[in-house]
Image (cartoon, rainbow, N blue to C red; front, side, top):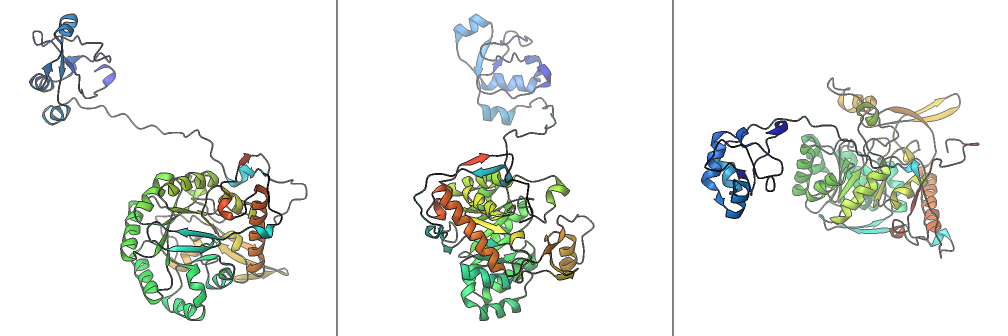
Length: 437
């Protein structure tokens, strides 16, 4: 065929007139591609003749050939088609603009609110698969061993905030915490990787402490088939628990995980302050656009999402909620406190706390004996200036979100996304007297 193409004939195929089997002319009206029938092998032509029926005598007379209608499925099963020439897949560039928190500001709008104190930050959700109910302020401490600690959880639960407890606590440590802090258990998730040992330990914890109703299934790459199957296994084993699962950044994967049994999808690849995935792999997605697109996909299935990573200040948390996130997960903003994990270091009269990603060399040495030879570290370790008690940071974050709501006229956090209009900017703040705060 011209240009090496070998598209299969479908209904309305033209074959040579039976009186001249060697003819190469075709009906240009019915087959505008102008395919040369000589390029079909004899078995194809024979199958077409056996299965086709003449349609129009007038058309035959005009064109000197017969238009033959064949059964497509029978042709596929009986005819031997020319070999298709393989064309290498070309890289695709998505030219749509994708934005991060730093690329936008929220436009203020007329408001009837008189004070920040009038803003209600509490949300209530009913989850699609577990059928459980949640009520609280939907900010989550990340399941990192420097953030998702029992000490952090004890403070956050006083504010009705949530903690995804890291997976490296033993069953005995869980039991001790549960016996001493029963009021916190409804604001906790037990975390798990996708290994068989993780699954076994998760079962032991949830069987021993039935008050814990949330599971956080966490991997760096939520696009693997193995991960999807693991989520299905967790749903089968714990049909009434609410499952958080991730991380992904695209709508189709959000939908697949929800349909596989997850209730809340963690969104974010590479935006974290101690994550080096984008540098090591070149893979990622600007967080604001990821949240907006994934929220749209999840809400269409009555699912929910967590914006995980990329927040550097209370304004970023507000932007994540404005973009449609149901929950916002924080790592670096909650690290470096008295209640955070990580070694406390004193140098030159100043205090620092270690903060590192869970795919960093430090974390892998601590829990896996080192970095496996087939992989690279995708996290870094930093010395974070000591911040004191986490309660002060929590109040600052919540105060910032309340103020956001007053600027856009949202009396409740639930209304923030409906009241949000983002404007693209080239600068967030005046840099003259800038500092790290």
